[in-house]
Structure formats: C-alpha cells, structure tokens
Amino acid sequence: NFTQEHSQQTAKKQKSEEEDCPRMSYMLSSTRLLQQHKQRVCTLYYRALKTQLSWVVSREAFNEVARDLRNQLEAHRHETDPRRINILVSKFEDRLKQYAHPDPYTLPTDPGGSKWERNVPVPEEACRMEAYMSDFK
Image 1 (cartoon, rainbow, N blue to C red):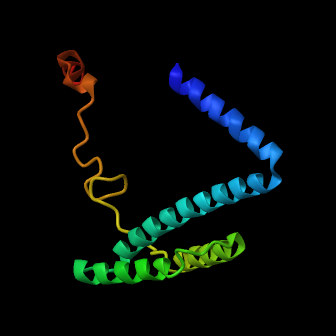
Image 2: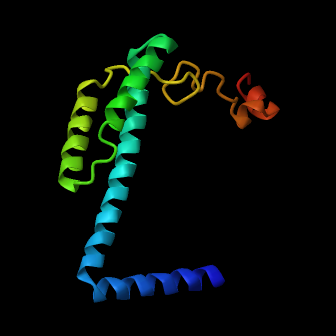
C-alpha cells in the first residue's frame, strides 16, 4: 500500500533526523507537547461548556458565560512555555472541579435522563401465545 510505505519512509526519515540533530529532536518533542496541550485545552473547554449548561438556565446568559470563558482561554493562546501552559491548564482543571454541578443536566433520552428506557420493548417470550396461556392453567 502506497500510503503505508510513504508513512513508514517518512517516520524513518524523521527518526534519523532526530538522531542526527539533538536540537531537532527537542523541537519535535516540544511540538508534540504543544499539540497535546492544545488537545487538553480543547477538551477542558468543552467540559467547561457542558458544566455551564448545568448551571445557567437561559441561553442568552449561557452565551455570555461561554464568551467570557473563551476570552479567558484566548488570552493565553500564544503561550509557548510548556511549564507555564501546564500551570495554567492545571488551574483551569481545578476551577472546573470546583464548579462541578452536583446534579448535572442530562438530556432526556441519554442514560439517566427522564425518558431513558421509558418505553422498554416487551420481551419476546411474552409475545408468544403458549407462554401467555400457560399462566392461566
């Protein structure tokens, strides 16, 4: 498969470049680290929005809170120091834990929601006539 061969060749080339140049290795690991932090921040942002949905009732108020939250994250968007990023993300996680709702909002059709398994299907054996008639003998 061409794509597999190409990706293997690219990986080998990248590995040889990392071995040849320690600075390149540091830069690549730093890039990977920043990518991991980016994913971590995006996940935290999503969790923060879901938490806010449990606390804020009206959509207008939610939009305002979401905008403020986004502005707080955008203020540190261009941070490149991994230690500083880690501290900021840890503070954000702690704040998210502090504001966790004791009874978070659940969609009605999701597990634990008010409509979850409301209309449970009838078991197949109950639909058979023999099983029904044996109860009356």
